[in-house]
Image 1: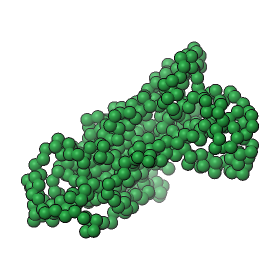
Image 2: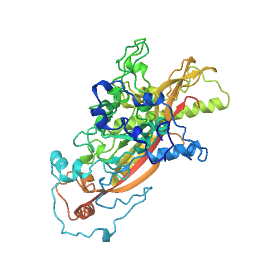
Image 3: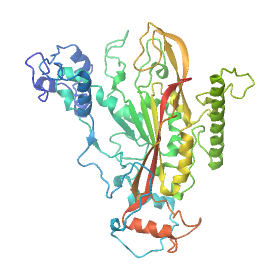
Image 4: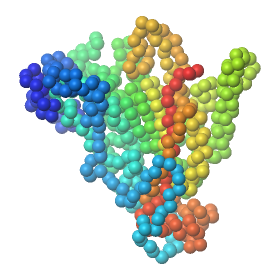
Length: 501
């Protein structure tokens, strides 16, 4: 099926085709011959005769192209490996936040009450066996298990299929990065952060000839061979204060091996990040001082929020912005012209005026092709009320994006965004907005690793478990059976919008 000879079944790859290097095989990358440095499989196939596969139902008109694409996408979708990590308990997943009592028959182990000490050190707390990577702590979740097997056999069936689908694995896969702490104990897959993955796991740009360049010089990597969807399971200190990951490491979403173009333009200007969908998951154990069960705090308008009072101040600023926007819309609806001294005259739709210069919420301006941002907010059941207030505030957040460019009537819009050769040069503001979309909810039962260091029901300063405290008794009963608190998740999604839409 791969050559110009007799057509073959879709499930029977031609031997000549299978002998070509597989770009997704680490073995083929490591064992290429020295004189094969300029080989590019995609370019090679584009110069070869391609069998139209007229007898295949995928290409003879029996199956519509849209259905064929869906089938190919499904065939190239990864699935959990047979030895993927599994829960040792029933997480009892629900897609709501209704209370879920633990029935006695699910707690077969019953032991006498013990006055366990709450004076454990933070180091000792984290060194507990249940909080180790190998036990699944922090990364094993109802919506995330590892390892996942990627399926690439479809690419070996024939040349036509390969040319049509070779970019799909990277386009449709959600790449998960744990930002230091996660399921990559030997660093073999570089899932600690996207920059390491792009540098070490993805193929480097295929050598070739740049426009105006010389043979053997690195060529620009194809834009369709880059991740489109990324998920960050990140601690707050990585997102905000200590590492300030999104703001300071803006190179993570640009391939580090790009060369400047003929005009000498820098990497940051010549490359529009192909990332379209970003998801950030703040787990129960990602929040500041979760071990000591401190109050939740977050704000996109700052580098790092200091305390609850500072967060409350930012909440008030957002409410004031919302009221001014409502007043401006009211005046526009009745045709009233805003006066220069009017408080709502200078209000910005993208909330840019609310952000400090180095706040993490401004990092999305660098992701010029971003279409959606999703944030999962997770906490334990005792903090459900706190998180409800934060999420109610979060749906009002707006994140400024890089400005868009209005195309001229004769120009063709680029698939990756940015400014096309036919653009008029006019810009318009863009931002991420969550308005009008329902917040998705989910809850699940964690294991005993997700308890904080102290009982949340006991008075502050309690030194040991108290038999008279119902919280201590329930916590110990669940812990003896390997269970932890029920975890609640709120998922908020922001979509790119144009100002005044």
